[in-house]
Length: 324
View 1 (cartoon, rainbow, N blue to C red):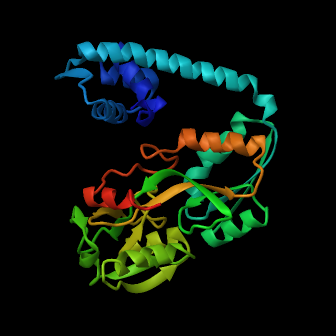
View 2: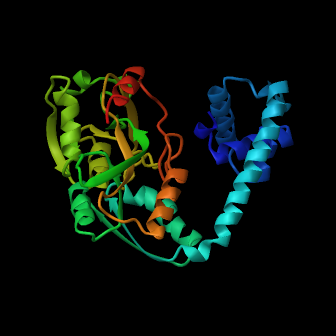
């Protein structure tokens, strides 16, 4: 059960329990009150219990079971700190080059914290990074030009080992004045009559088009681009809608136009974000350490640099569990 509760959420819960107030915890750990409230709500949903009694304008107080959970949470955090101490003592054993390939649409979001944060944690590691499309990443893995690739499960291959980290369901993105902008959810059929801007990169385009084909519809593609930010700008300027999986935290395009995310309802295949290595590659200690960081820092609840998916369609959840 606790595997679905992050260290960060435990820290927010402990701070609130000790402070007796979410606002006081916010000041103490320098995290916004909504983020702390969301973490506590997530923990209560995961554990199926009420941790706090909310008092209007008077803070919060722990329930009886909440006090028990607080003690356990403190022990878990202490044990996790011990793990970091052990890890810090072995920093000198993780040294050498790390060649990371990143899907170009993901790189601006996930690499600052995930890749370069790894470099800060292990100063003896020399990091180089390349950004390209999915097809090029696989070729670079096969030719040993890179050690590991951060990408999606867009294509399976016997010579590539893909390890999923998080699911990203597709959603619809429209501009401020699009006819669908006020909708809370739309279906593939709803989209067929509207112009579409397609992210046109190898395997990604096939994935987006397959969402329509599997439902028996044909999209009205009016513009294409291999650059995600160009697609977002076209959408923001009213050229059409797009479908995407990655969720940049920014809700405006680079030219300042507002972008609106809409849930895509129905049985639609989610992409899985993860890392890929060559099946026959002997992973170095550096690469093994980096894969461990990926598993620790990326989950369905948190993806570096992205806004968390705020909705899951029950039908979509059933559909994505059947995807290998």
